[in-house]
Image 1 (cartoon, one colour):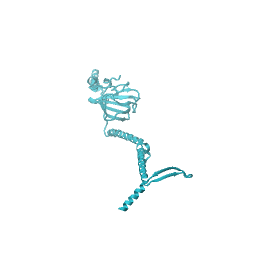
Image 2 (cartoon, one colour):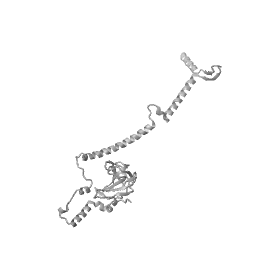
Image 3 (cartoon, helix red, strand yellow):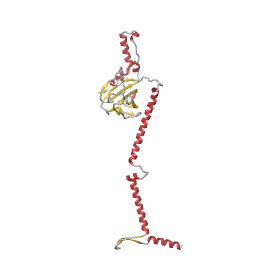
Image 4 (cartoon, helix red, strand yellow):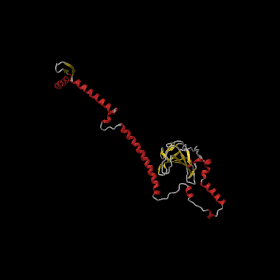
Length: 287
C-alpha cells in the first residue's frame, strides 16, 4: 500500500510540477517569451484544442461546399440533376407504355390479321353505289329517297341544337379555314390560329388518348358526358396525358402543324356522339 501511495504521489507530482518554457534570442540570450506549464496543463490544453479542431472541421464539412472535395460525398448540383433525370425517366416510361399499348392494338390491323373497319357510317355509305335505272325510280322517288337518307344518315346533326344536354365552348379563337363537309369526308372544322396558341377543352371530360400519329401529328381525344367525344389534331405539343380529367376551358395543348396531312398551324377539331360525327358549328359559337 505504501508503494502504491508513493507511486501515486510521484505521478501527481510529475503532473503538477511546474515547468518554464522560455524563448531566448540566440545571439544575446535575451528572454523573449516565457510560459509556466505543467504536464496536466499541457494535456488539458491539448484535449481542448483537439476538441475545438474536430468541431470546426465538422462544421465546415457539414455546412459548406468543401465536403464535395471529400471522396464519397456527392455535390448538390449532381443530386439535383439526378432527381430531375429520375422524374424525366419516369415520364418517358409512362409515355412509352402508352405508345406500346397503342402499337399493340394496331398490330393485328397492320399485319393483316384483321381488316380495319370504318369508324363512321359515312365512309360505308359512300362506298354503296345504287343505280337509279335498276330501280326504275322516277325523279320524285329519287328526291324523296335522298331526303330520307339524309335524315337517317345525320339525325344527330339536324337535331343537335335542340337535343343537346351539354354546353360546349370554342376550343380555340381563330378563323375557320375549312368547315364540316360530310360529302368530302371532312368531318371536322379547321381553325387557323397563331402557332403555340392555347387549345382548350371544349367541355369537362377525361383524356382517353394523348399521343402521336403519323398523319395527324399530336392528337388528344376527350370523352365527355352523354357519350360525346371531342378530337383535337395537328397540335404543337400535348399538355395532358391519358387518364387525366380536365375542366371546360382548361388548356390541353398548343396550336401546331404536326403530321403529314397538315397545311400549316391550325386545329383540326371533331365532335362525335354515339358513333356519329356532328358539325361543331351547330353546337359551338366560334366567333
